[in-house]
Amino acid sequence: MNVNMDYYRIFYYVAKYGNFTKAARTLGNSQPNVTRAMNCLEQQLQCSLFIRTNRGVQLTPEGERLYVRVSAAMTQLFAAEEELGDSGGLSRGSISIGATETALNIFLLEKLKSFHMEYPGIRLKLYNHSTPQAVEAVKSGKIEFAVVTTPVEMKPPLKKIVLQSFREILVGGKTFTALGSQVLSLAEVKNYPMICLGRETMTYQFYSQFFLKHCLELTPDTEVATTDQILPLVKNELGLAFLPEKIAEEAIARHEIVQIALQDPVPERQICMVYDVEHSLNAPTRQLKNLILGGSAEPEKSVDIRVYKK
Figure 1 (cartoon, rainbow, N blue to C red):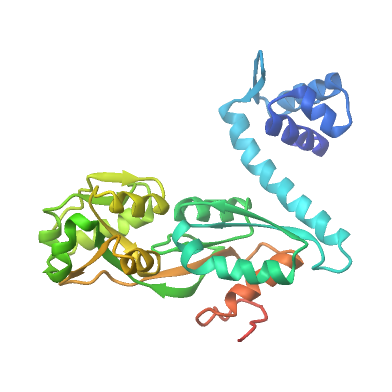
Figure 2 (cartoon, helix red, strand yellow; figure 1 turned 90 degrees about the vertical axis):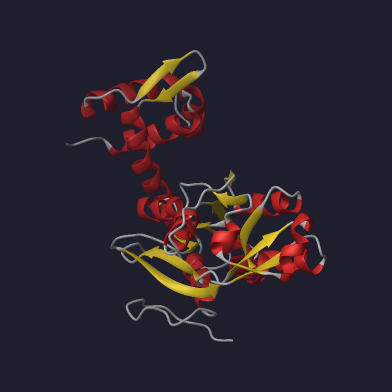
């Protein structure tokens, strides 16, 4: 199919703004020309890409699928333009990465702080993802790489590098202070209300498998969308929850929550970097990746990178 590539560029801006006029203004073109180009694209692809509304346009299901691919390609083109336009390599540019909240809070923030202090001209686009969302974003090219928590599922050409291990502990609010002097079995934990991330997350799957190994079913009373929501709910006595030690330690020290010992400790989890081995990175992204790996476990031998050791 011999489609004019400029049509895809126009399509990207129309889909991004949901408006022909705004797209034309951004492109320095006229609204009729933009409309005509999109009509031609729809004819060549033999499908409708937009639904016209009083406020502009909305993507059809076919349009949504096309936009996923086109936006990923445009992201790469923009990154390439920035890299080629930067003779210094690291004086300016942009990086797009994804991270789960746990990985961000207990590992990545310190790395980003160091990077920003050394390269203040680099713009950082950080996307808050669950692990499955982050893997899909790397796969589609929306982000350069992701820092996520296990379990993580992926297929080649995606690869992962383990950066750091962490352990989660069971905590409760002041109402459960008496439990702090006890050691509970997992069966006893089920007698209390539980707070957990949603069923669509890998964390939920991890704890579901943890409970199943002890012939128990995970049945949380409260499901939340993000890790940051769990600690406030625990403090307000909505139930018990599993939290990374690093996230819970300050609230424990202030006696806002209590740690509850388990007969069967929660297995260790890992923070990992996920990347596409077939995807080339711009200079700023390579530098950030190297900085992150400088404090990691052994990198995979197939990765051609410089590792900075402290």
